[in-house]
Length: 145
Image (cartoon, rainbow, N blue to C red):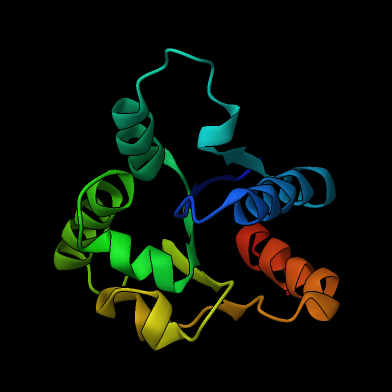
């Protein structure tokens, strides 16, 4: 059965948004994974409903960490809304592996809220290792060694 993932990220700048879109496309094309990404929503769609349903219904949630993501997680808006749902899920099941940190910029401690900073994730800060790291993520999501 095809796995479904939701991608949580901050809209840092156009370059970062393009990287996230390429990452989502690569997961779909190379891994056969269904990806929920806000950039694919039709105009006029409810972002709040998309975020809430995507987080709850997906097999995994890939959280793309940057220093801006951390800042926005404690402010208001989409990232803060998603973070509140993620934190609530952790309170219900501290051992869940549903939320998968993907570091894009900074370090785990400077790019993720504490609930995610200490979780096992993958480091995508070095673009020269992109394809190798992408395959690791695909294998993890699809339950392959």
